[in-house]
Length: 625
Image (cartoon, rainbow, N blue to C red; front, side, top):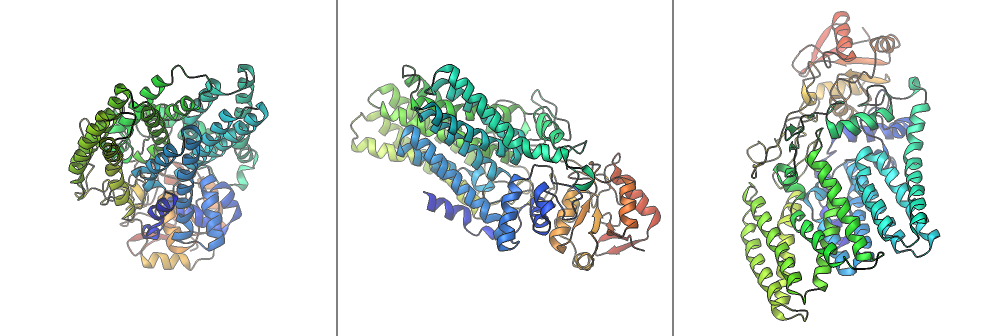
C-alpha cells in the first residue's frame, strides 16, 4: 500500500514545476536568508511574509538548502509527507480495529482526489494533515495505555502535534481537538478526574508548542523583521485570530464571503449542509462520505453496550468526531473556502468508514448488519454515478462499471451469512471495488497531469486556476475542458470571484500569466541591491523572484491591501539605493495597489518622480535615476 502510494504521489512530480509560485518563492527566499526561513518571508530582503505561519515552509526550505532549490527538492518532501500520512493513518486504525481496517483506511486516504492533489503541491496542507493524523495516533495510544503515566505522555505528544499544526495552517488545526478530547474523556483508562487533568496538560502542550513562535514574533522588534502578511497590525496573533481565524468562519478580515444564510462564498459555493456534495468540493472529497456517515451511525449502535473503554467505539468517536466537526465547519464557514481545504476531512472519512464497516462485517450473521453494508454500497455507487455523470472527464463511463459492481455487491452481501460463501466472497470483492473505482479514477487522473497555481482542481483536465498566480487568477476556470466552472450537480454553485487589486501590476493575480518577460527577468537579474524591484502584490513578486532569482518587494501583500511598507520607509529605501526598480501596470498602466492602501500612495509618488519605460510588456521605473 505504501509503495503504491509513493508511486502515485511521486510519479512525474516535477511536471508541475514550482506548482504554487507564492509558496515556492518563499522557499527560494529561505534558501537565501535564514531570517526569511525563520519568519516565512516572501523575499530574502525580508519585507513581508506569506499570509500563513511558516512551519510547512521550514520543511521545504531545509530540503531545498540540502539538495538545491528545484521542483524536486520543493515537492518531494510534500509527497513523502503524504505517504507518511497514509502510513500513520493505517497504524492508528489498525491499533483500534485490526489490520484489515487499517489497510482499507490507508488506501481510502491515499486514493482521495483532494489528497492526491495536495500531496503533489507545495501547499501547507500536506504538513497539516500529517501532524493532525499523528495527533490522532498519539490519542489512540493514550486510549490504549493502561497506566496513567503512559497515557499522559501520549496526550502531551498529541497536544504538541496539534500545536505545530497550528503553526502550519492556524485555526484549521483545531477542528480535530473536540474529537481528541471527547474520545479520551469517554474511553481513557484512568479515572475521570485524572483524565480531565491529563487533557488540560495536553492543552498546555498545544499552547506551548504553538505559542513559542507567536511569542517570538511578537517580541521581536518590528523594524528588524518582515511585516506579517495578511495582518492589519503587523501581528501574527492578530493574523491567527482575524484573517486566518474568525475571518475564515464569519467572513471579513480580508476574506471573501460573509454572506451566510446560504449565500455564496469565495470559491466554495453556497454555504449549507449540501456544500460538501456540490461543485468542485464534491469531486475532491465526497466520494465515500455518504457511506462513512452510514458507517458511523451503525457502528455506534452496534457498540452501544460495549465497555466504556471499548477501542472500536473509541475509534468511531475519534474519526467520526473529526469527520463531523470538520464537515460542518466547512459547510457553514462564510469566509474564504477553497475546495482543497477539504483534504483535512479525508482521514476522518477514511477512519470512520473502515472502522464502522469492519464492525458491521463482524456482525454479518445478522440481516440488519448485512442490509446496512448493502446500503453503504448502494449509496456509494449512486453518488459516484452522479459525480461521474456530471463530469466532463473521458473516463466518466466507469460509472456503468460501478453500477454493475454495486449490483453484485448488494446481492452478495444480502445473500451471505457469517460463513463466507462464494456468493458472499464475490459480493464482498464487488462491494470494495464499488467504493474504490470512482475515487481511484479521479485520483489517478489527478496525478497524471501537472497542477499549478493557488486554486488547483482535481481530474485529468484540471490544472487549477493558477495561470495568473493570484487569488483566483482565472487560469483554467477550475480545470474543466470548456474553461468554465465544474459541472453543477443538483443545487451546486461555485464562485470564481476573486479579490481584486485596482491598478496593481496587471490587476488580479499579477496579470503576467505567472511568467515574467525575458527582458524584465534579465533586467532584474543584473541588479545587486537588496530588492531588485518593488511591486504591488505578493503574487507578482513571487513570479518575478522565481524568474530572476532576486528579492522582489511586495508592497501590498496577497491582494495589495497590506500596509507592509509605508511611503516614508519606501522613500528611505530608495534614498539608500536598496530598491532598484518599480514594476508598474502590465500594459503600461499606472502602478499601484488597492485604492486605500499605502501601496497606491507609493505608486503615485513613483509616477510623479520617476520616468516610466517599457520593458517587455511591463511599465518599469528606474529608482536609481
